[in-house]
Image (cartoon, rainbow, N blue to C red; front, side, top):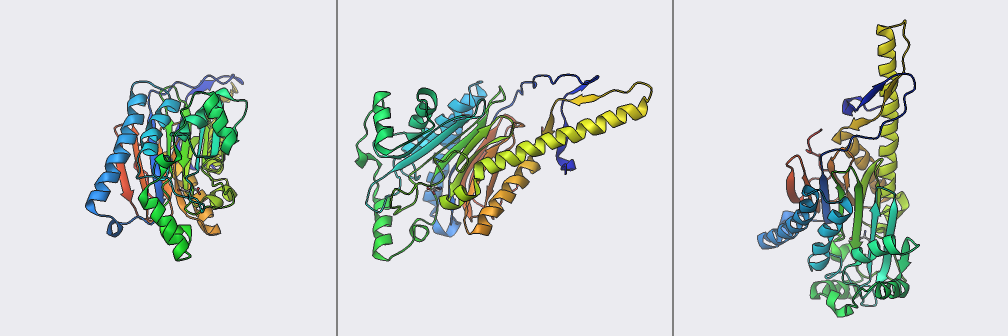
Length: 375
Ligand code: ASP
């Protein structure tokens, strides 16, 4: 069923069974970032900590937005946004990653280009400073999508990546969390309180979408556990026909729901059914007004409102919650709507658009309503 309120007419082509035209290149851009979701509330943070997180988020957002504003690609923008968060010890990605049960920092990342759905991912790397760059190298310079551990590191060296000493990633705060977990037989959720995975999604002025996610996983992970962040379709997905998504949360649940791809698929189906319904309505109206000349009105594209993406993201996050999982997602649509949805008390996040939106935020009451303007 078409979500009427959210429908905007795109370009029309009137005539008998006219071929679809190439989509008009939108002159807009949009980016959203996250630095993890979880039990994040004002009483758990000092003013200084809050300011530190907000500054780090703003730096990442600005780095991505600057590229898009100059006409750069969504792929470049998301990497520019993720790099400073991987380098910051505040987030659970790159430096500052959580520890495994054995006391190592094992890093995961994935990236996807909405133009051709090319994708790259790595898991369990310990010597690559910026795993998001390695994931992109897998995408562009290997015949594969997903590389693990030593193999991924051999590939990195062959591609000219510097070997970073594993100690670089270690921080006292994360080591202490592992020790507390072991000493008090706690779960990762008890010690972490929040997921610090980082991610970015973007739409560039050429209408291309991209998504990327980078993480250290969950504190005390064992037995080669892999979460959703490096799994294409779970933690990351991008398709120009639907949207770009990056997730953070309890990875097992995000894998089971296939969160990122599920959101994109629902949006793609929604868009196509809205287009067909609009085409049908327009043809009927045209023929009613001129019955002697039967015409087929071809609707090339429709524009969905921000609330369509918000509803779909909320629905999929509700499924995660029903299974017992928690976390959040960011998404950007081809219309440039930058949307958050999370079922935790907070999510480190930010968004900026060519329409003048520029914000970073931390706290929130469950699911956040998007205030991105409709185009
Ligand atoms: N999703 C990540 C994982 O399960 C954790 C996070 O978002 O921080 O590995």
